[in-house]
Every structure is written in structure tokens, then in C-alpha cells.
Amino acid sequence: MASANSSNPFFFAFISLVCFFFFFVENKPFVSAITRKEYSELQHTHHHIPLSSLFPSSSCSSLPPGRSRKGSLEVVHKHGPCSKLMKQHTSSSVKAPLTVPHSEILGQDKARVRAIQSKLWEGQSEAREGDGRSATSEVSGQVAAPAEAPLPARSGKILGSGDYFVRVGLGTPARELSLIFDTGSDLTWTQCLPCDGSCYTQNDTIFDPSHSSSYSNIPCSSSQCSQLSSATGIEQKCSADGCLYHTKYADGSSSTGNLANETLTITQTHVVDNFLFGCGHDNKGLFNGTAGLLGLGRNPISFVQQTSDMFHRIFSYCIPSTASEVGYLTFGGVPASDNIIYTPFSSIPQSSSVYALDLTGISLAGASLSIPSSVFSSFRVLIDSGTVLTWLPQAAYGPLRDAFRNAMSKYPMAGSFAELDTCYDLSGYETVVIPKVTLSFGGGVNVNLDASGVVYVVSETQVCLAFATNEHLVDIAILGNVQQKTIEVVYDVGGGRIGFRSASCGGNSRFSTGSANLNNSTGSANLNHPNLIWMIAAILSLNSQITTLRLSTSQSPQINYNDYD
Image 1 (cartoon, rainbow, N blue to C red):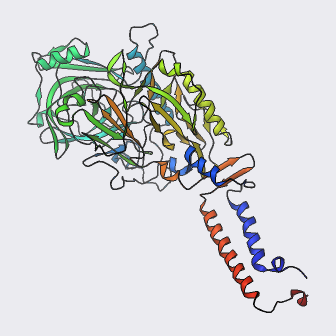
Image 2 (cartoon, helix red, strand yellow):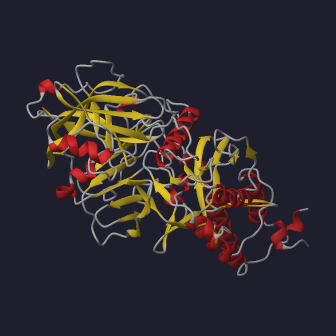
């Protein structure tokens, strides 16, 4: 007589479901078992996320309540569905395409980096000819009065990369304008009528100072005009209208016009009178769609310094993980109770205007990379809102790249893309495992990057490590905005420090707990697969029915199924 288990229909159904499960979940080979301890360790060292979370969706996702600070302005990507410039993209496609090719974005990013390096090493034998968007300001006088409060930041093509812009009001009555906010620039300027030379196309109506009751040009005899000249080291220029400015970028972009005072409106409760800015009547370059630039550098002419009485030289921003999500930009203090960790500013002899930090180490998947301490002590890292990728010296980039390739060895590699030499084809995966990257700074500060801050996604077939290597040994390292995604970055200029608060505006951290997609030589286990959850529930239900049947049959006459042969 056969055993009850072998002839029980519930038993056969149970076995069938188990076999079907192993075949169904992504059609992967057999699953190797992992211990609870191994699973827990992987949660702390790897991001386990749906591949789709790295792509923008076709609809805009607002910040959840409590994520942004009171009065903050929205940070919106110029090419995403949250931007009014994307009205033409109404497709229901899950992955909303960028309007600018990634090759162009990264090409302009490289140009910006070259310009930054060239500016810092200007006049030295190692200097390179840059053609990017870090501006060399030529100002002939006048100090601008900055705006206060939180601003909406949107990412755009203006600085030759995935830079972000905010919406502010200028003049009386206030006219809304989109300005790129840039921690690597000092002078704030916008296009103005009349266009004596040329004006590029912008989305907003070009500002007309003749329609504002609070506008005034700065005379050449003004201390503001001479102050700007001494602050920038550029000989001032004048015209019959007063003090002139000229700001020139290494890629050929430029803005020339009058230095003026105007009323700047950040929010209804944050209005700055006598804001010093450049009213540009001759403008050229890659500022497509936006009206100008908001300079957040450390020079006395910057917005930050001009509004020191109002905002105490403190501002913060949080860049969203994808173009379909919203971040924020805020001016003023932050609550002391917030979980913000601070690292002190470092100094760069070549420039007192930029923001620099001491990078002391890099970890991947919980393990510190084998990089000699002398490598980190020999350079500083510039943190920049306008640069896209993070650029490291070869001695630091090489170990990071090698460790990342080792951790991602179970995924098929793809060809390189622009400056990105470590890319993967993830088109066959619904869920992916990406090793966590931690950057260590002076003062014992460790910053864990979001998954969106580790990789740069060109397409499903090209997901790349979002770091690049510098061209020259003397080049400074630059921390780009990709690595800053979802992290609130607090600039306490008066306190001489920069703070970081993780998971502040969305990101993939929400996927990193309670889910895993483990890859090994024998196959994979996707512990967050929706079908897996359904299968487990079905198996548990069947197991319960089998147990109930066994209990009931133990008190009932036993049936010999052989009698029915």
C-alpha cells in the first residue's frame, strides 16, 4: 500500500507549486539557500531595488508631507514631468525620456569640469584649456541684494549638465523667472530687455526693467562697483548707464549688461530689497529655457553673502533621485534636532569662493577600499551643485571601479559610455542588487549614497558606475550632484561646515529594507518578487489544509486507495 503522503492530492499540489515557483521566478536556475545572518548583512551592504525605480516615471511625484522644510521651494528636473517645459511628454510610458541626449549632458559635464580645473590652475604649467560652464566673472562693480527663503530647484541644461533651477520673482511687480542655482558661481544675473546684442530663447518672458518701479542701475562711482572689481580682480568697465558686468564661461557662453539693484522675491514672506544682480542685454550660450543664474558661491558678491543678515549664510538643498520626483531648496537655519552630520570646510589656495571638503576614505559594500591615506591627503574635494558625475584622481577611482566590478560580476557588462567605463546590461532583471558606497569626510563623517547616487542610468542596457577619473594628477576631485541625490546638503557658510542628512527627498532607501535579489554562481533568489509572495501564501495555505486533513483522518476510518485499483 502506498503511503498517504504519496497519494494525497494536496501533497502533489504542494510539490507542484514548489517546482513551479522555482521555474517561474524570473526563469532562474535553482536558488541557493542563505542564512538569516547573511541576508541581514546584505541588507546593510547592498541596495536591493526594482530596476524601474532608477528611471523617471511619466507622472510627477510630489514630496511626501514632512519631507521638505517649511517654506521650501520645489526642486524640479528641467527634463522631467514635474517641469512645465515637459508638457509635450504626455505618454503613459513608464520610462519618460530625457529631451537632451545623455551623451550631450555628459559631454557638457566634462566641459564644465575642465573649466573648473582650468580656473583653479590658471597660469600654472599643469593648467588645461577648459570649455565648460564654470564661469570666470568679469564684473565692473555693484553688489546685489539676495533673496531669501526656500527656492524651487529644477534641473536643466544651462550649465552644460543636469543642473537645477529655481523659480523666483524679480522686480515690482514681481515677474517669475527660472534661475539656475550654482554653488560654483558668484554673480547672479538674468536676461533683460532690450537685447542690445543678442538674447537666447528662454521659457519665461524676458525681464524688462522699465516695467519695474524698484529697478536702478549702479553708477560707476558707487562703492559697490569698485567693491566688485576688487573682489573679482577684474578691471571695472563703465558706460553712460553706469557700472557694467561681463561674465564669461569657458565654453563660449557669456552675459554682458548693467549691474543693478532690484527687489527679489523668494516667497511671499521672503522679499529682499536692493538685490545686486546683473541685468544682461547681450547673452549667448547653452542656457536654453532658463532666464539666468543664481550664484551661491562664497565671494562677497554672491547671493549667500548678500543675504547674510536675513539667512545667516545658511542654505540647503535636496536633489531628487529621478526627473519625475521633486526636491527642495531652502535658505536660512535648520532645526538643531535634525539628524544632520557636519564636516568642516577645507581650503583650496587657488580659490576662496568654492566649497571644499576633506575626503578621507571610500567604502564599498561595507568594506573600506585599499587606498593609501597619502592619496586623500594630497587633494581636496570640491562639492558642486552644477557638476553631474563625481570626478576622482586615478589612485582613488581605480580601486573603487575594481571593487564595484567585482561586486557586480554576476551581471553582464555593457560597453562604456562617454567617461563612464563600467556599465552593465540589466535589461533582463526586474530587481537588482547594487553595492552601497560610503564616502568618509573629515571629522569622522560617513555619508551613505542612495542607489541613485551610485549609478548613472543611460538605459536598461547601460547602467554605469557614476564616477569618473580626472585627466591630470593635479586636478581637484569634484563631488557631483548625482552622488548628492536624496541627501539634504546643508551649507553653513558662517559656521565653516557642510552637513548631510540622508533620505531627505525620496530615493531608493525605501527599497533597501526587507527585500533582496541575491546573485551567485548557481542562480538567484528574488526575495521581493510579488509572485514569490503569492506563492509562499499559497504554499502555506496548502500546508495548513494538509495538516487539517491529517488531523481529521487520524480520527476517521483509514481509506485504502488500493481498493479502488
